[in-house]
Length: 337
Image (cartoon, rainbow, N blue to C red; front, side, top):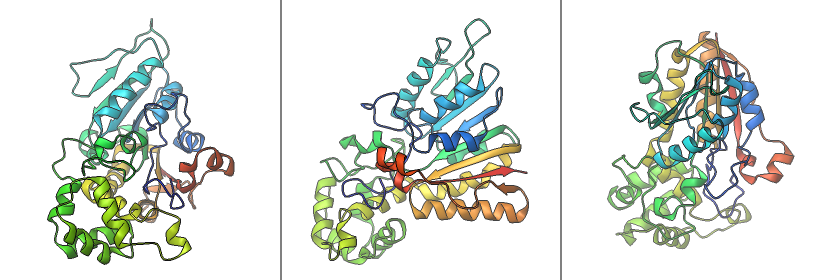
C-alpha cells in the first residue's frame, strides 16, 4: 500500500506474486503486463527474477520462455520460495524437484514432457547476483522491491503493527540482526537517524526518545503503542497513515539492508546482462525509486544503458482501484548496450 494507506506499512511491494498464500493463485501481480512487456521475454532466453516471491511474475516469464529457456528465481525468504516452487511446478506437469542442486528447488524438463523452461530457485539475496552469475549471463533481470504480503500477514514475522508479534522483521531468517535488537540497543541518536533516513519520519527524534524511555520493547504491538503515544497526528496529512507506519518501514529497511542490497544489485546488472538485455525494477517508495533512477541515469551517462522509461511507469486507475498496492508502484527499465 502507498502512503495513503491507514492500515498497512509503507513499501509493501512484490506484486510479482508475493501475495499472501491465502490469496487466489490467479491473483495478478502489480504492473504485471508492464513488467513483462519491458522485460521483453524471448523464447529460449535466460532470465533472472531477483525477487521471485510467490512466483507471479516468474510464472508469466516461464510461459514465454518455453522448453529451451532457463528461469532463475532468487529470494531471501525460504517460505516464499517453497510456495513459488509449487506454483511453478503446477505450471507444467514436467516440473520436478532437484534436491541435489544448491538451489532450494529446480524444475527440469525434456522433450517428452512439454514446453516449460528449466526453473531454478535459489535462497539468496539479490545482492549476490554479481557473485553467482557470469558476465553476460542473462537476457533479462526483474526486481520487485519491498516487503511481501506473505510476510506482513504472518504476525510471527514481526513486520506489521496490526497484530501482536515478536519484533523480528527479518526477510531472511538466517540473518542475525532483528528489529528487537535495533529497538533496544541502538542509542537514541542512532535510532532517530534510522527512523528519519529510512522511514522519512520527521518526528524521528521524538519517537526515538519515547522508545528509549520505554525499553525493553519486545513486541510489535508494544512498539506501535509507544510510537502512537509519542507521535499523535496533528494534521490531515498525518492522519492519513498510522503513526507507526514510517517507523516500521525504517526499521525494516535497516534490518534487511534493503537499500544497500538494491545498490549492489543495480551495480551488478550491467555486468550480468547480455547486450540488448533488459533490467526492470518495480519500487514502492521514494527512497528505492530515487536509487533506481540515479543508477539508470548514470548508466546512460556512462554509455552502458539505454533508458527505456524516461519517467516511471505507474499503474492505471483501473489497476489502482482494483488493487490499492498498485497506487505507489513505480516501474523503471533500461537496456544493456
